[in-house]
Image 1 (cartoon, helix red, strand yellow):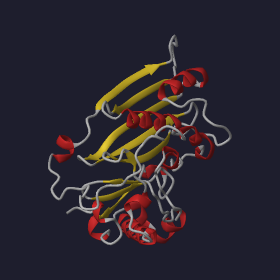
Image 2 (tube, rainbow, N blue to C red; image 1 turned 180 degrees about the vertical axis):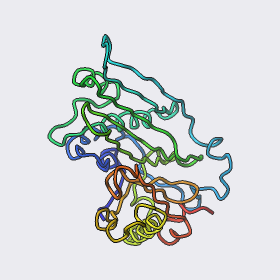
Image 3 (cartoon, one colour; image 1 turned 60 degrees about the vertical axis):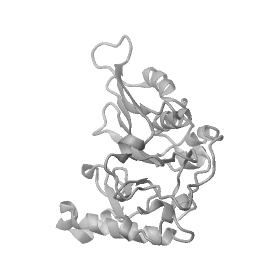
Length: 278
């Protein structure tokens, strides 16, 4: 597994699992350059032993951003954009990162860098290029938050006129509230434990297959068609690490975006102590 440090925004954004990532994501290089690079205090757990209402009371303040628009002046079949996102009034850099990431997650070509870097710029580009029934949904929400960290889930869905179905993409962002930086896998793993993390993820995948009716109909055939794939798209939650996949990565489109849960009980000795519940 490759080293996955997120001391700069480019290294996190380069992990966005979209066809355009090799070229489009370079535009994010300076977005959070001023973010701190320090990690959490070694003696303070980022995950409280008892969560309860902690994530809502002690997490960073958020505000919703919701709107839906059709192409101005259009009549009949019209392209549309829907945004269901969040902003962080006290953390403008995080707000900018979420906005930028959602915008570039709409890219579908690896031949050129996107002509936009924000949702506002994407909207302008979309109205100029969209076919009559094209549609896009950009969404962001917090999956978990407490006083020390914020786990954000980013999702995009796009339908292109004439397609059989829409194209979806998902990405987690784990924000260290204290250090003001995105946490990558290398930030939370003990040194040399990437292989152990993959093994724990593979065990979670095995459990998921056992609970998947489609996989149980023909286990060998399903595994040949949809083999296990390691992933670094994780979210820190109160139950463990949630790892989420795009459609077609480990399952057919009908399975949506599968989520695998690795409980903290299986991550002791793999995660750094600060990321294990006390």
